[in-house]
Image (cartoon, rainbow over all chains, first blue to last red; front, side, top):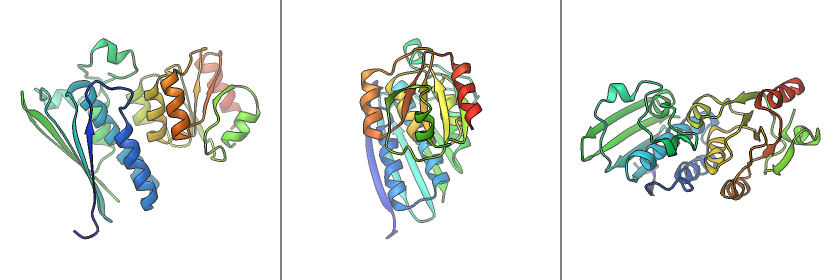
Length: 140
Length: 109
């Protein structure tokens, strides 16, 4: 697609001081492209939650963002432990975050529910011991 | 009320003035759990919290709140201050409890 803009970010594991940098960068690029504020907010929230999850649970990973005039596609791929029970993980309040992460204000169990709430499409592909890929779409 | 007008009331200490003080404050939101704040904080709200780390600034930017008020005498750490400057986020602080700080803002809206 001629109009597609593709961005790629490597996410470092366990680095909470850098967590959010990829999402912030996407946000500022979307702003410059003149994407409507509500779509920007949805992408920012969904991508940040995914980015934080990769830092907390998944040894980092790679985020690919594709921007077209119609939609924003986000693919978050990690090589983490995988999600044993997706239905349980999707429940608001369910969290396996360790205490040191909770002390930073995370671990409310709202990550995946927020990602679902703020995107138009969301798909989770997970294999235990191999990794998880989350694909999300926000329509413009 | 704009962020600048809130600053001018001198109710709160200015930690970082921010880049967009002309923007309107349209509500108040209180929460310390970042994921809940991320999902629920309305855009353009004043977010009152005791969480003063760099992730607070990330959430403030991405949820697009108008400003952050760090209450209960809590402090924004050094990394957070640097990030707030870089991102142009308005951060204020107070020794008041969260409810009191939020109420003061609410009364000005």
